[in-house]
Length: 253
Image (cartoon, rainbow, N blue to C red; front, side):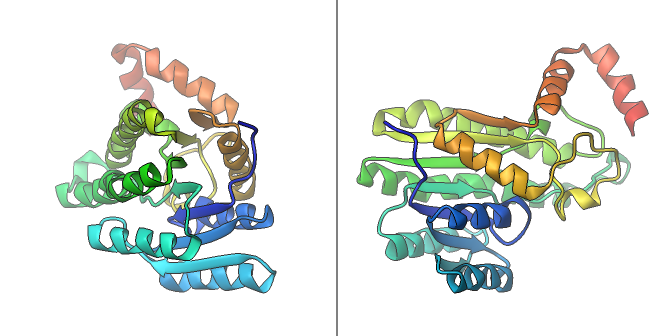
């Protein structure tokens, strides 16, 4: 099948950062969009801006941690677009969490959005794409899924679970002509990374990240991971022994 831009695109978590940049990127390439986010004012502004430039964009409030809102948002996308060629699940949160002040409630909030939010979306997208007979689901995880980094316990844990969830989905849904793509960015300049209290190497702007993601999806890559120096660095960190990893992380803090 030739590579081509996906015509009808659902972006979940489109109010800011990578999600907003993806909305602009896909609208610039003539895709019809449905934007979902819990920040209704933000996606309304983005959608109206796209429409004012001659694009096609619809929006609806949706908190991915709420199954009913996810069901309603995805139903709205089907009603608006008829078919969903591509669904990008980008909704996510993260902030520094240190063990000396650890809160299980804060941990739970992150996992509910980053991991269960992804699961909620899959639950309602899979039957729709099976009925269509095709489709792509691109889920945004992170290169931080490889280990438990200091100050990022909830984020790393949630993204590790997300990556495994998407991997299982990719293997199992192949027979239904549903492609599942895992997106694993390094550090991208967003409101989320602005909160980080540590050095972020190879920090990338959202527009460039969105272009890399779109091109990777068009090529039907199983995993879209970037930038290359961070990918190589994480591969190294993944295999170093604990006796070396632990003191490096303590010093990095």
